[in-house]
Length: 411
Image (tube, rainbow, N blue to C red; front, side, top):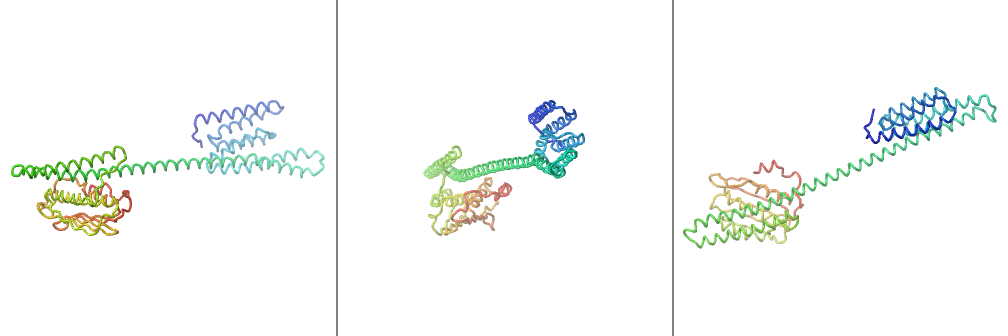
């Protein structure tokens, strides 16, 4: 029944009602009228004061005062203009039931007021001779009164509907702005997360491969130092060049992360020769079969090819059977690129150190290009098979394709 209002709003409504009621009291006190008009002015002022706090109660009180005014045979005057404020709030702030009651009151009240004035006018004309029929003249007064009161009550009610519609439109615009801000914030969060995952993926590919080469060369140099110092020096030189290259790539990644600019290391398909040479230097027997020309591929596709082969060879060196060949097949077609890496699993079933981030990173790269990947055991071998379009489908990671649960399962 009562609407929540700010204290300032309630004070404003009460102050306005008191001022208008006082003004009407001063105007009517100057006329020689019965004292019953005080009840009418006070009642209408109270209805005006609570119009926003309780539109329904205000409307009911207005009807009570109007009936009291007619029962006591008071002559309607300008104090009834306060009803316009009550009718305005019924449509602007009231519920659906109160709005309908306000509309019925505007039309029905006009009819009742016209009938009341018509009855009073007919009684006054009954003992007076007029040029025309008293009934006809009373009918004219009734119609004029109905039209005037209807304008007084219906127009504020319609204005309240307009006010309600504008308020609803404003709230809708605010809700839309809030939704747009939330969507933009979510998009920014997704973009930041994608960038963080990309940098983490590149960091893993660079560091994991470089450290694998460094560890292998360091172990070889330690044993070769006792028998062949030349081989030890060559291993140390490989360690030095690999570490420098990895340090440069990491610096580029950190610069892109810190300054939100720059580019991460982007090796191309042509750099696979250097990669294969590095892996052969650490003792991995890599055999590569190529078909097609990769020079026309976009940079993103060449980077994906390089990182997938790099991670596959690193995994083969860590987890594969030592001394067995690793077969790598690269097929470049006008519309697709196919990569297959097959290595023999270790006989004891043990695996080298790892966290599983490599396979997750490869799946993410393939997913971003719109391709597909399978990685798993096939008999005594471990096979990585990738098929992706030559031109990536999009540059963003599709939402929902690889969840945290799938990452843990891959690990």
